[in-house]
Length: 312
Ligand code: SF4
Image (cartoon, rainbow, N blue to C red; front, side):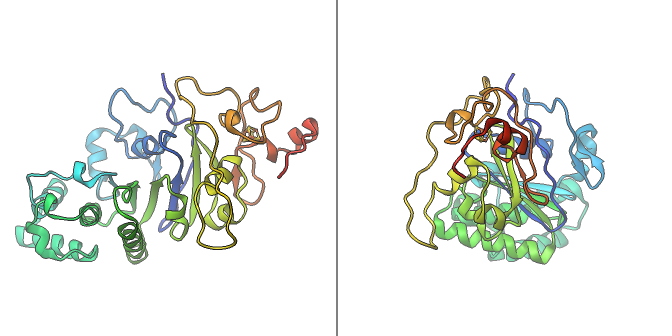
């Protein structure tokens, strides 16, 4: 058995933008799918709760979930080309989504679809376009328009900009943030790109090998990253600001989750590894306010005992 997500505890408030960041294979998309109860067999939630406005989604039947999806929360998938039906026009797909959840006269449905496309910066003329007739950025915008059909409280996005060039990425991010501010939905945004979410996320949860290793405000994480993995991520891409720095990256590879490392899962790659790290599971420590970090360097007890001289 692989525990792709293990002991994760996150929350997102109304209107908040939470960035979920980590390398490929760390479990961030699985977490998103688990929250939306969209895992396909043999994947399953074996324990834990997913509370959405007081309702535990884990115990809902498929029919009850269908009622909540799109209205309460919706998901924007990574690749719009895969998520959109290539043989149906954008308008027909939006109509399908609306019809599946609400009876609406055809004219009203068309009006709503046109309004949504306009909202995401697409000319409503494209209601009659097929997905292949749109650019990658437009396809992702169309997916976001569909996710907004019933103006849900939460939109979860799984790397929606990963197939786009940098200019289209930034433009889509600005669009998402503007929509979020106008419509006040909460966002969980999955990405491997810290730089992408820097300007937009209120808080960041950094994930490694199926666990959250650091959780704090975006400013706090960029100004004073605590976990060695977060530090590694931040040194893996160039900054536009401040003095030039050599990029160091993170040595080694993420672990195989079928046989995760003992103790701290980051220990084989960590430059600060101590004797205790491979031996004991690491709890979350709170070095400041609500910030959380899963690292023994933030345990007074461990640091006293180890008398480690970690160069922090
Ligand atoms: Fe590194 Fe130890 Fe902290 Fe893990 S617990 S990140 S190995 S110092």
